[in-house]
Image (cartoon, rainbow, N blue to C red):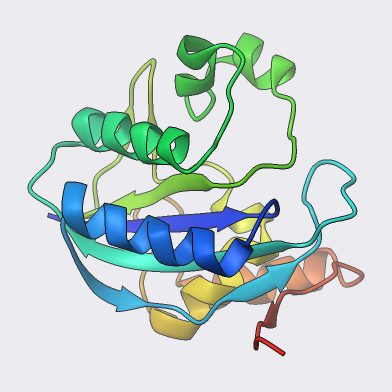
Length: 183
């Protein structure tokens, strides 16, 4: 099954963490078919002095959605991600207004989000797919546009390019992501 993941973090050696995330995803999740350039951006939803590096991966996986989510959470933990309440964190992508209100964005070594899983629309207590905030986040749309600009969002019925252009019109002052090149 084709799944699209977003990896990212702003703590520690960001490039090394993303490299290690790709290795672990290959070992535990499936074969990586496409990799976007690294994108650097400011924190989203909170203030942080450290900038984030993000990357989109297209992965061919035999795992179903909930097992995929569990494996990705394990990889985050292996890469140093600390979560206060793992069960609450698993619900953060769900359309659960209580958990949404309690969400606290923080700096982290690694975050792995499932953006798409095939063209499936999933709404369970643990997971919502496609990821419900793709269209709000430049740091997601920018790397997606690099490798799959014409992919049509299965719920919004718009291409990634159209979603990004709409975000730029809606929030022109957004600090847009830039391709990261190591100095």
